[in-house]
Image 1: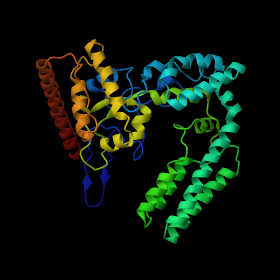
Image 2: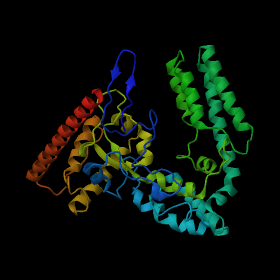
Image 3: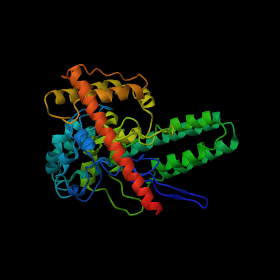
Image 4: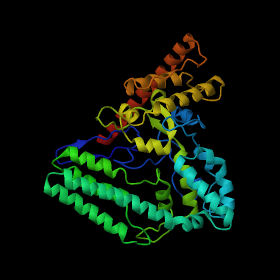
Length: 401
């Protein structure tokens, strides 16, 4: 994807022609290397933003534990046979199609799948959407109770700790608006967590007391998410769109159970760092293979902050590297870059500011082999950078001309 050309009356800002993985929040969601809903899975692209030899080689790691959460990854091609027809069949058939991926589903999705299996034993002829419809009412009440509780916490905090009356009033009005939506008992349940958070951000960014603003946002983050809450997942996938009145399909529900575990290329140094420093490059030393869900969760957060927020990453990252090393030792992966674990370990230690220190001693390469491989990779990357620079310069000249 190219940076848009920014034009003003005074100057023309030239675009950067380097491809990059977008920040899923600030710009657009990842379009590639993450599974996307489609009427036919066969139409979904599983290629990375970086479709070079480097990107392809890392993606070929396949069934490895996610370095962020430990869940074993699903290669997008493994689920390419899932489509709206076979997942729309009776739940007994759909369950058989999804069952091979059960042990690689993320916690919430795995529990929802368990509920579907249990319900299917009584009514196997119903599709998975119809089964979840039967338990929607009880889960909807749970979600509403949780949401109202969080909104009440925001209101109480605003009354007690937000000193500027105008700021407090804006927060209370927002809470009242959201509370009314939830309590209206609309059959389509039109409260949207994301829209609430967007409105809240517009208020808090202008608040006089930024410490209070931060606390309000921390409380609001407790609002249940479909990725972290079983009831919220069920409610989300059994409600109609408030505008179109269209229901989620059994296909969308089935894909939602496996999609978070699909592997994607993750930059250790983000493509769009928060500190506005140079973005991460598409290099072996800057790539790990992580689940789509956790790749998206991190956004462009610096690695040291990300690890501090999720300390278990240190253990998951070692498990990831151990499996990769085992695959390399067996000749099953990374044949083009056998020193990949060492290169990644060096980047991780640097970017995490020493929080992640990986043991790569099990890699069966001699010191001479490691030195030779590193030199070869560095030479290849320098040649690639030089070629890319020349190509970009040529494009710029053509653009100006």
